Length: 169
Image (cartoon, rainbow, N blue to C red; front, side, top):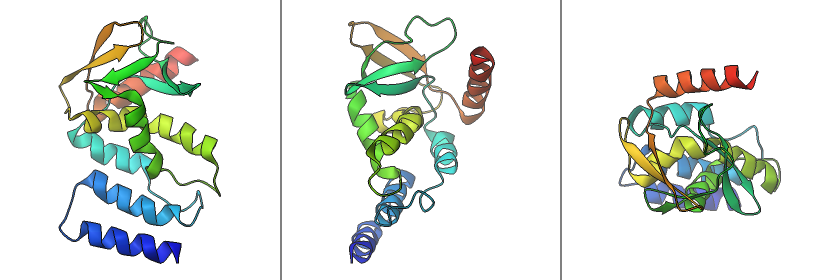
């Protein structure tokens, strides 16, 4: 019954068309009724398609006591460990909240869903704040500072991830 309700709500919502993000939300809503981590969106594919237009913000985040913290930034960046308040005025927690419904997990594994949503955060942030590849976003930190970060293309974020991997090893 829950699956059929999700299917019908999603079908009605999408009758007039919509965005890639809206489509992903509808598919995730349906898949999440199964409570199976093997049935859901292909997050890497979704990220790449969304990134084609909106891009990616070059930081990784984690949550600590309901705060969005920068887990990784460029190697020489002083912002690692800082708390993110907002991106272009959109609360950082709202961006995370936009990612959570897209994640399918076994049963009600909330911590696992949260960790997956954290990994998706920098991939959906540009979309959520209305930025596009080549733009610059304002990252407001809890210490009051504003960091300007570029919105990277898929190719650029791939290179960024490669350099991140090299710096971590």
